[in-house]
Image 1 (cartoon, rainbow, N blue to C red):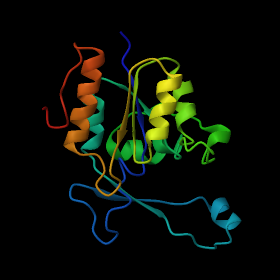
Image 2: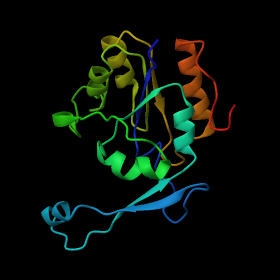
Image 3: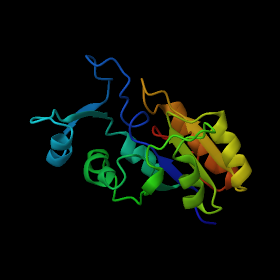
Image 4: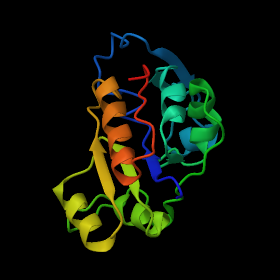
Length: 187
């Protein structure tokens, strides 16, 4: 049996951007990502501050230990492989190219990522780790995807925690009982 997909958002689950700005969460390292000069020029800035990311290097090995095929599901798209993945010790991962759906709000309240993720999964079981899903997303996925799905919300103030890894492992085990239940601490 093919492993389920694990769609990973960066900002919120891996980068707890909503944490107190003056206090980096314990276990996290600060990464400064330069913003593109052309992007800054388009917005009228001569010198644009780098983006600050807080990343926990323990998350990479913990994610790799889960019985999933990892896939970026983030506005970072391919840049997640350039900046985020290496900081976490992750190999280059596939990513969902959101194309015209990127950041386009829908009138039905379904998150702009939802439909592209369902299309990318193409009938495969998946878990989606993000800080922005809603009941509308759950209903949309249930109506348009017949395989098992877990929409797993992560608090953007604290990022991924041990109980999140436990929930992801339990979901994978429910799909395939031979899947390991190991979490980031081997639990």
